[in-house]
Image (tube, rainbow, N blue to C red; front, top):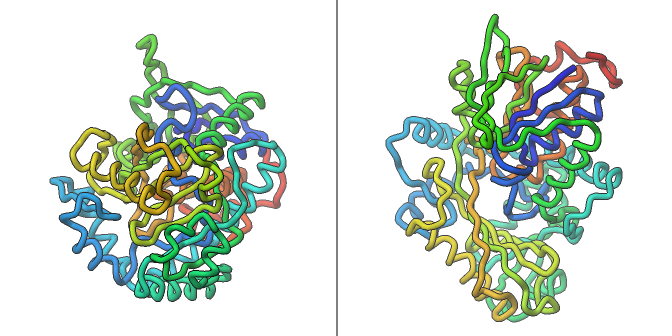
Length: 436
């Protein structure tokens, strides 16, 4: 069958790849000049299957309230006259219970394991190189209280079969000796050896190139003007060519909405309401002056809730979330504070290791749901499929989300226990190629 995929980030390109694997004809539309130019471009670089806790937990409301007036806080809520923001916020509060947390963790771990296995198989199949580091993820703590909280979280994850180990200060330094200068301020950590890191932007662009080699059509620099419907079906996608100004309507048998934070507003005219709100995340990518002194293991700094990942001769520092609409500017006062805080914190932990004079700052909109669980599956419109709402875990869940949706669209049941959108069981067929 013929499928149009709207969005060329890690989610859209992964979906396109696995649709091609199932034998379908694929067209990908994106407003950018290449793949992975928005939220997938400069994220935290972590494949964090074992560090996938939802933001919503019993302690979250108190933390958010405490952080309200701090421009450099890990999670910043800027109230706006936007009913979508308030609906999202109220829904988030309903998830701040122990029962909801456990339920959501179970879903995220299931998708994460499936996705990690899919990514490993895909990399083995294609040989894509993307500064991959298979050394696990280390979460370090700067206070005894935070370590105790982290140990409790590790116990929750172990109940779901995740190998997250609690480490002493000495054990943390054995995992990542580069932390030695910060050692006196360490109180311990947790570590998952099965996790990894790598450059999502490099990976996605290379996978898009391989999709094109296999026959996929890419319409870059094309704006989605309207998703048209007739007779209870999507009848076409109206697009505008940014270079020529020409508009045309593209048609297919099925359509995939994988447009990140912009999925929700683009689908509202069709009567589809998705509780996705953008969380503005920041990163700084620095050139290493002394690579031999830099960390190799991907890390999470609990005190600032930031990720630190090695990408060849560069280091990526990423994190924080700002719930303030669709603004990705880096020149606002708040953005400047948050960007500077990333570089300042890295210099505190690894003084003199990186060149901080020319930081490459970036901001992207993480498409977040109150549960952190993405929408994957069929929408209420039979030929429109959803793959959006992955929040901070788009890179972690990208391969699995794309594979799962391609299998669902082909009438197959993905091999994991996950709450897919739409009626999955009604169309399940044997695990073989389903003809269009």
